[in-house]
Each structure stands twice: as structure tokens, then as C-alpha cells.
Length: 197
Image 1 (tube, rainbow, N blue to C red):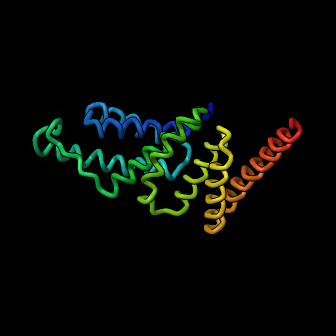
Image 2: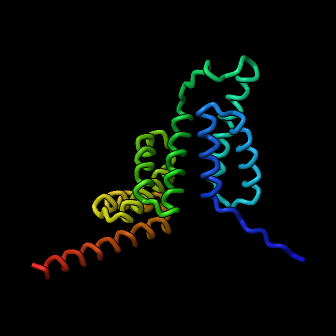
Image 3: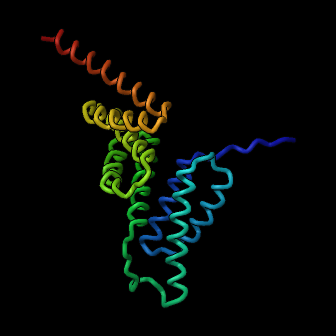
């Protein structure tokens, strides 16, 4: 009998990595170790997603780095000073971006925007133009979901331009379609207001 294994959505694995990274930052190393093992198991059946794999690698590096220091010296709790590096800023960006995506996927659009805005403050640490364009698109979609059309257009137009420049045509077209939908909705709003006066 041939059993088909259902792939775990990468967003679910990303949310679990966020939880793991939170434990590292709050010095809950026992819980962090348990979550690390849980994430490793989830990765075995996760749908393909290079960004989540990269995020896993960075968090794993940070996890091992901190636990190495703790096993060689005295316990880190209380005495450990967390000095942020460029990698930590990028990890924080990914933390907020993936958290925001999780909120967005759960239709909590206002919360996702708050989280995306925290990620936006760390966007300078993102050295990949495609990833930056992806972020701009998500911001645009989130603002669109709460009817903030002008903000949405601003982000979506930036994303669409970036994707065209990078020759990622499918993403550029997706952004352009949402831009078109916004113009249609704005036109409908304008005409409904005009007919009321």
C-alpha cells in the first residue's frame, strides 16, 4: 500500500522557528533545544521553501553559538550579554517578517502590519533584492486587506518595479493585478460617493 505523506506548509514551520528563536532570545535554552528538535522533524516533510531553510540555518547557528558558550563557561542565565551583530539584525528582520506572514495567513491583517512595520525598520540588513521586493509586496497586500489603498499602492508599485527589474515576472504580474484591483475599487468608491451627492 502506497501512503502519500502530506507536506507541512512552510509558514507553519516558519512560525515554529520564530517560537524557537524567541526562546533563544529569552534564554530559555531547555525549551529552545526541544523546539529545535521539533523543527528538525518538521523540516523532513516541509514543502520546499528556501527562505525557511535559510532562516533555520541562521537560527541553528545562533542556537549552537550560544549553547557552546554556555557549556564552555558558566551558565548564561543572568550573566550573558547579548551583543547584536549584522546577522542578529537580519535574524530579527526574518523573525518579524515570518511572524507577520503567519498573522497574514491567519487573516489577522492589522497585527500582521504592526509586525511587518517592525521588520521594515530592519530592511537595511536584507542584502537580497528579491527578498526586499517580496517584503514590499506583502506590506502592500496587508494594507490592501484593511482598505488602506494609497499605502497599499505605494508598496505594491515598488514591489512590482523591483520584480520587473529582477526579471521575476510572475511576482511582478501578481503585484500588477492587485494594483489593478485597487484602481477598480477606488473608481467604484468614487462613483458611489458622486451619486450620493
